[in-house]
Amino acid sequence: MSTLKLNQAPVLVVGAGIMGMGIAQVAAQAGHAVLVYDTRAEAVPQAKQKLADSLAALVTKGKMTADSVQALLARITPVAQLSDAAHVSLVVEAIVENLAVKRGLFQELEGLVSEQCVLATNTSSISVTAIANGLKHPQRLVGMHFFNPVPLMKLVEVVSGLQTDAHVAQAIFDLAGAWGKTAVYARSTPGFIVNRIARPYYAETLALLQEQAAQPAQLDALLRAAGFRMGPCELMDLIGHDTNFSVTQSVFEANFFDRRFTPSLVQRELVDGGLLGRKSGRGFYSYPEGAPALPAANVGALPAQTQWVVHGSGTTADALAAAVSQHLGGKPASRAPSSDWVGVEVAGLQLRQTDGRPAWQVAQDAALKDVVVFDELPTVAGGVLAFACVGRADVPELAAAVLQALGFAPVPVADAPGLVVARTLAMLVNEAADAVQQGVCTTEGANAAMKLGVNYPAGPFDWLDRMGHARVVSVLRALDACYKGERYRVSPWLQRGALA
Ligand code: NAI
Image (tube, rainbow, N blue to C red; front, side, top):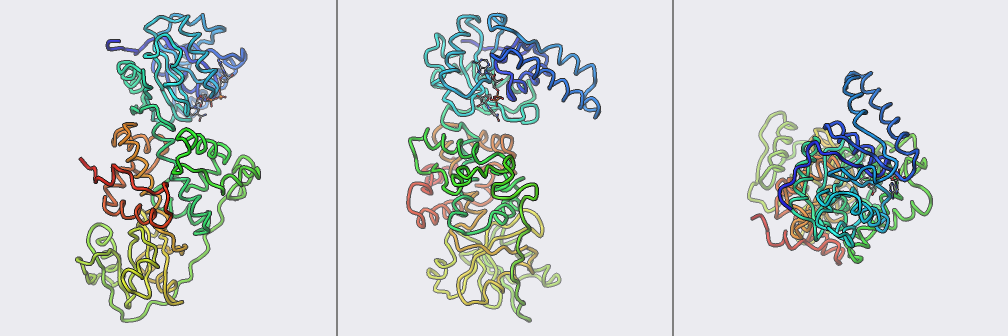
């Protein structure tokens, strides 16, 4: 197939559900004549009326003009049967998530539309290669994976199956751009990009909950302080544990039960108990109340007249030095830049940024009695910061006092490897590195997809740059050494230091 142009081509959307109608809206907004078909005859007029109501609200708010809304709606036409749409150049399918039904639909369409017509599926979890199996022209089938709500979410994953023609993928990539979206190429593999790379965001929190390392409200607050819009627990409560669990389970099964994707018993118990989150009134939290306030940490007194030394070099050491200097009323902090750890030493107590090893192990390796490890620094001033201690009984209170004096809100958690944020970020990087190595996407594609598809504050390879390759690998190695198994094995791409 040579270069294809789909701009202004007539489009058929099949399925007038939440996704189909969103796709029809953005296509019509971009000027396409859009036909919509649904097996439930009443579905299309109903969905069109709902769309008209929501657009009318935008007119009231002054965000759209009445004329543009009228023109947009006039471009959307319900059709009673598929044969009424035989002339279209593009079909976007957004029907029930079922392989046999989707295959049947595309096979039927092939008998109606021209040989040049591009067939796109909005599937979020079914293999594009599998949907194309049985088509006369499987090379014209491509994934065009939108995110919900379609008019607002910028990302479209353009998913190629084994037989998808590169020109077809490119035409859909260009079209998504013309519709105001950012397109990212993906290879058809379980979860594509976003649903795959996002798994550790939930999985690490669920693992920490299972070993009682922290409370849901603490984990949420810590990950929000790292820049995420919602913490994992409140996000799972919003998505619904049934939905979130079934995505995890489908990625797990589709990867032949690779243990890296093992679903969590903590979440299964919530699902089994009907505690599905917001929609059932209770999940990790009860609603409408939501997350409880964080318990205050026990903060001891700082020893008077003590010396503060900032160890190590780099961004975190510099940030700590600035915080120490502010605490000392502008006096510069003493520095020990050649130390092989980053952190502060106060009254003989070392507070080290985690390199993945739990505090007990740092103490053992460095022949120390008392040690504190702390997490990635929060991105906002005064943000919460997790720490864990080993040693004498007053160490937690002293550590909390030191962290508070440096402008952080200390959150004591169990002595888990990689603590909370460092562990979560390292695992997101690890999954993204695997995806890149397996040709699912590029590093730029992964960054864009995670920022636009799930609103992450940065892409996984931005975090790799910020944390540094050595530290990410060190956190993963510490997790792997502690838990032994496939879950935390370091991606071969990262092991190579693959920054070519
Ligand atoms: P939905 O249940 O809201 O709508 C599906 C519509 O398709 C219904 O109106 C149904 O009557 C119609 N339908 C079912 N079988 C049909 C057939 N054989 N021919 C014509 N119409 C048929 O579903 P939703 O949420 O809009 O999802 C649609 C597709 O988009 C699924 O493949 C889903 O996995 C995918 N998707 C969903 C997202 C979401 O957040 N809901 C996000 C991204 C993709």
